[in-house]
Image (tube, helix red, strand yellow):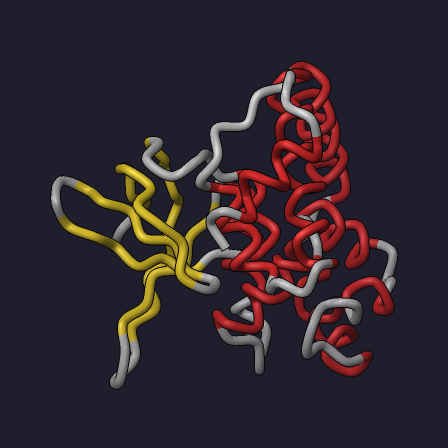
Length: 204
């Protein structure tokens, strides 16, 4: 029903972001791997969404690009894989990782995701084998590599954000709390790691 939500990033709450869209706040659950790629709090974001409708709840799951959304859609077609499990897989693996693991029958790669054992990983490969195209997978992989290479400035800032998040995790904070704190900062390339960490700690 909702293809995407575009608005102002208000705040993080666990594995959920809140986006203000014309005065309405949308709770959107996202892969933890996406948090270090989000802009700082108060920035405009566009989140591609999937709406899960159950008798007891309606939930929005969000992604920064349509490739992640497409892979999420494939994963939830697998018997026994619900939206939360699919989100966990995409928190640990990129769509490229998943596609090439499926194409190469590499169950151990998929089994690295939280809550996914060898049996479930094998089921994912079996049921999605016919839904993953080799040529398309290579094309998408090349596009993603080119995007990272061309966006050197954005890539550098993204790396700095990720390193700050990992440093906070090492200090004992949760991944989501660390991502929230770092997301509140306006990080620039001239900032040192120590400066970023010091500023992020103010928001913990």
